[in-house]
Image (tube, rainbow, N blue to C red):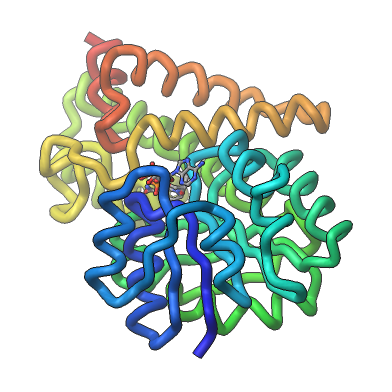
Length: 297
Ligand code: NAD
């Protein structure tokens, strides 16, 4: 059994912390909103009233926060995790954030003699609830060896991607590729519809041909061929378009810093921006099919 401080008990962090409790760890949780702290307590965790209290309570401190600014706020400063964590504690940030912040916070932790991992996830809320997340982990080999058994209580696939920040790099590249393949799949199905080819025929051919990809085969944005896909339930999320836009912005920020050309990633970011600006941020990201179908009218 480990003692764990868990900060950020939202859609993802709440069920992740609950899985740690189920695995018999002593979990002390904090969130700026009080309701999820009460939920964790009902499930057998302990409440903390401040970041400092949660940070001091664990040999391991895990965070699951919205974005880079919240991560800087919670880790740095006189009452932050780095100042208040136990000597020798391992810090694990599971939020999806910019590479620069991940590396800056890990460097500040190292300066204070603390090990830190960036460990963003894929698998969404269902993966968090079911303990089947994929973790992409950046940090030292020693920190990874120490963190891995804890991450295994919340996920099924744990991959060490290299030094600090590399977990975030893997995450934003994965999601940029996913967004581009989703949009390409939408365009193909919208064009076939215009030209009079039945949806199921296109799916049967393409899902076994050279254009096959995860967005098409497992998550088809055109209603019909994949019964479990969000397209068959009004594009209820799933993984929201707003979250996809956030990750695409992170990929474009990183591409700018590295002077890397990502023209398709940039186009995908623009299209998701349009979709979200149209009031669709809460829809599943495959809902962009609706916008692309309309554009072809
Ligand atoms: P969420 O908004 O539901 O949860 C974030 C939680 O952090 C909230 O409960 C909020 O109150 C809390 N919080 C914010 N600032 C805080 C602070 N200063 N101190 C303490 N708590 C604070 O978001 P989520 O869906 O759980 O996502 C969390 C992270 O996981 C994000 O970086 C997101 O991009 C990433 N992610 C989400 C999904 C998904 O499907 N939701 C999938 C993969 C990755």
